[in-house]
Length: 503
Image (tube, rainbow, N blue to C red; front, side, top):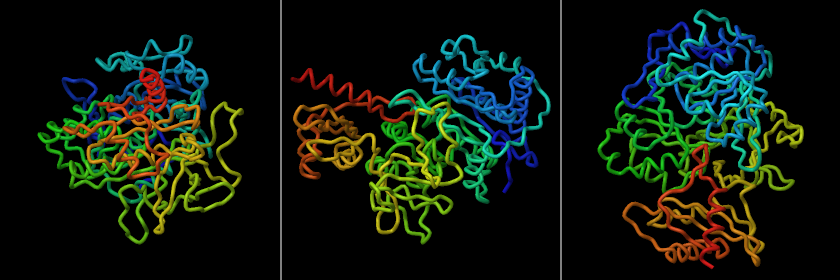
């Protein structure tokens, strides 16, 4: 297995660099195939061009763009030059994009044409120009480049959180932390035959860390600019993708395309990694039926703590569907319930080399790192008798109804056992008597028509009375946040609005 020093230099130059590294599906009419040699040269050229512009080691360079090959070339080139890559969530409102660019003190911004207007005035900006590639070609400075050797704990990336509970926070990640992620995931495995389909945004850890693994593993990435279910399915069939990674709502949207799935050859898929949001039993079962030959992983990771936390059981026990697995041998985990450590349910704390250096420019925030180096995730987990861990819910999503604590994920998993329910989302609304009470948005299975009363009665039969949703709405889609997770803030606003109209 190769040993890496700079997170921007994950290409092994002793292999045949004529192999296709990225198939970029950013244009509808034809794919762009980029070899390892071409990607390596593009990254070198970006590093040279930035250095020529006087941008100095440690300066931040942002990327505001949909997925494209230039995005990855820029990210690698930025880090090779000893600069800090700042992938920015382009779905943020313009004022939040402006905040991120200024908070990071970005010295330069790469963008695509659609997002150019969202970039802050006064910061040098260059456009990838996905349609023709000419402008980016004029920017880069072809030639060789010797990447810097990072110092211990030297930042490589700032990844900004979604900011759902306030302004986004810049998570500072070192070269060494995510080289450890890459090398741990490789672990002497030969990934060279794999084709990774990536449609999740590259500003998100889920997609970016996988892209880094694929390049280090001499694999091929099939890259979509964004997730559209029908394009995603067609890409699997046409390009014989072997490895899918997605957040669960993306998979749920894919599975609704019943006719296209039936007409598409999906036999190439060997692995599906779902993460970044809870997975329901309904979704897992439906995916197993659609891809019976694929190994499906319900994964867990965080931006602050990295994408490696759990894995297979050391005794070979099969991982239960709803479990995220057994603690990875190179990661320490513990559950904290009040002052008690290693309880059977509590807040997950984890410790490994991937844990962040801290939040950029936020001395106002209490550190989520304990004195002994554990990252406090804020996620509630339970552990079974075999050591398998199960996600229960976010501690900051828990609400109290008449003195009873409710985790939305618990209620959702119960509702999704209903034979007619495809997906459920539960949020609280304010109540003068109970404080808060649960309501539910339900997406039915294709051809099924459950009633609101059906759902309420099912909840009363299958769960404690305080968990049953006081209002139920049957919908055909749920609002998604910029990371393709369910936008719970939008659902709460919608629920309050709809409740008022029913009174």
